[in-house]
Image (cartoon, rainbow, N blue to C red; front, side):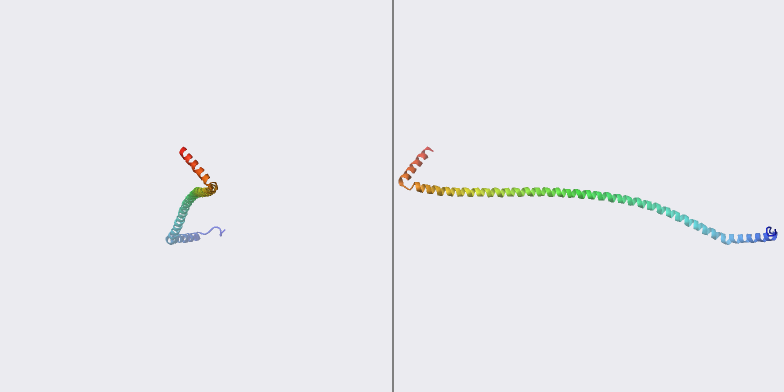
Length: 164
């Protein structure tokens, strides 16, 4: 039983050693340990605050990025609409210009055809008049070959001239 119950002297010296150790630790080691723990606690708290701020900032950046992406999409859609409208306008303008040019070319072709037609008609009239004159000349030469026929023709012309 001696092992289980310590003697008074042993307890006294152990108590003195404990108190000395406690005094030495509180005098020299306790403050640095507590300061180290406090610094560690402060650094952990600072790291948590920084992490929270970074998380908040990342959320803000993400929201801003989404806004920018939405704006970019809208601008892209507007640009595509404008480009489509410009293309349609250019096509319509080209069609109008082509139609005007086609009408102008048709009018020019009609004018050329009309002038060619008029020239051909004038040429035909000239040819007909020349042929008519040649035929009349030949007929007159044959009919007026003798002097009595000439006299008769002159008298008829004079009679007609008086009536007109």
